[in-house]
Amino acid sequence: MTTSTHGKLLRLRTDVRGEDLTDEGLVAACATGDRAARALLFERHVDAVHRFISRMRSSDAASVDDLVQNTFLTAFRVAAKCTTANVRAWLFGIAANLVRTYARGEIRRKTALRAAAELTVESAAPPDPAVVARLPAAIDGLAHDLRAVFVLVDLEGERGSDAAAALGIPEGTLWRRVFHARRALRAALGGER
Image (cartoon, rainbow, N blue to C red; front, side, top):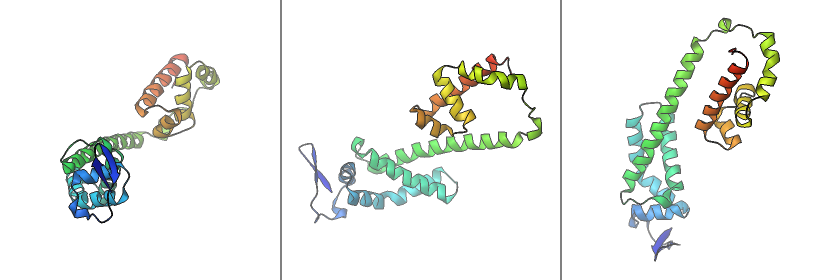
């Protein structure tokens, strides 16, 4: 474990008991990667964080457990940036952000599933052979950035997060480019989808 001496983080003596350390000391130790400090911080606050997330998300227990785990993993990763004296509130803030992100993803997933359920295979008309013949040239006419996302997402079937990671761009940027690529292709193909 660590302690601060003149602005430097140093390893703590092994004879120091965990209950003698403050939460702030544990967070400082977590910032250095100290596994014992991480375990103590987790042990001290896991019940409160679990209860908080359970109250925020009344979903299945596995999702709550995943969010609790992600809360502590995030806390360990950003421990060096913690400036508050109220570590429990800091952990609740991290948990609240993760729950919000999770909820947004759930809404998107449910909307996509509803939309997919409403589609019928019979409603899709077979593509016009003349349009299919013009498609390669239309794809070649796209700017490189638009062509890359279109090919990865629409032709290769890559998930958005994987395609964004492969291209080194944020996922939001990827979806904006996919939108623009599809719009440009529709225009190049005379409005055909």
